[in-house]
Image 1 (cartoon, rainbow, N blue to C red):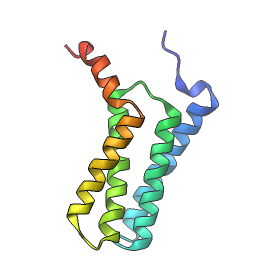
Image 2 (image 1 turned 120 degrees about the vertical axis):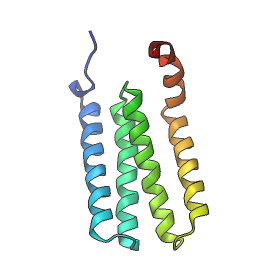
Image 3 (image 1 turned 45 degrees about the vertical axis):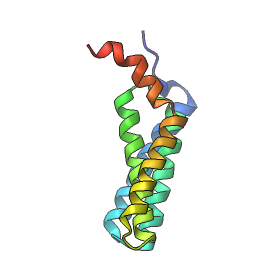
Image 4 (image 1 turned 60 degrees about the vertical axis):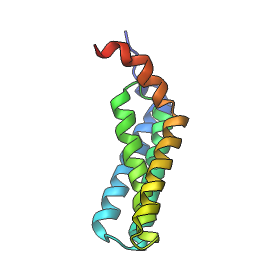
Length: 119
């Protein structure tokens, strides 16, 4: 029987951080698109997503990849706005953040471990 992550404080804190991070990212993007204050809001939301991902410790590989991608894209949006539309630095930032978050949260190891269950 699988035990839920929501039975302890860290799991609940992770879910709350993810929900708040997503809300902040969405509101900051919609409210003032392509402004420095919007970029600051999105990077705060992306940081909360990464923190929530660390506290949730989900076993779902798909959920981890989605949260990792949203967080990396949030950091990329921040760089895009701050560099006034320089796509090179934006793409490099998204790739670097995705690699770092994937390494820290051991996403690659989980994918390799669950690979035998996909067939």
